[in-house]
Length: 172
Image (cartoon, rainbow, N blue to C red; front, side, top):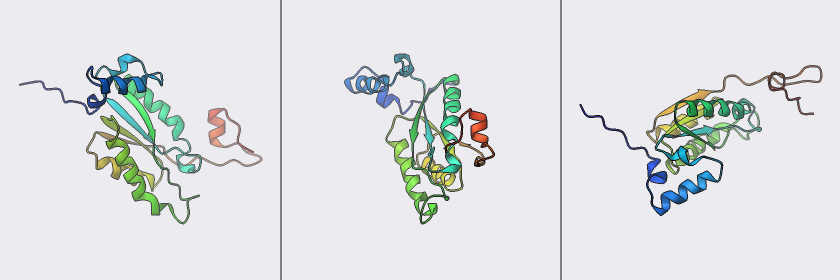
């Protein structure tokens, strides 16, 4: 039985000693990513729909940090990227109108970047199918992480669940 290692997509960007590989690694290192991060480990994209305009996804910014730590601990290089966020509460005329656009955003973000696998951070009934459709078109290993239910709001006499757990006071 032979033990063949699958070639990673990210090697086309970061692997080797050529000028293009050097430039791609340099551009990433200017963000503080150490040189040894490009040692052949898989690059895992963290597809984040976080937005303050989308209440059901507003807590995904903090969740992304936990997901990144998990990817590091598993031996990968996590790189977060944003995609359009949909929320029925603020989008007009309806968030459903933009679901396929988000799907295309996800697909092209994955295809166009050095990503070997992706973790989708989803939080509502519009972003979940949109991100799954976009990632499925790319045929890469994919995990969807749901942020769970939307957080409670705050009022004058009560602090929101978000503020209570994060130590931040509600906006006034």
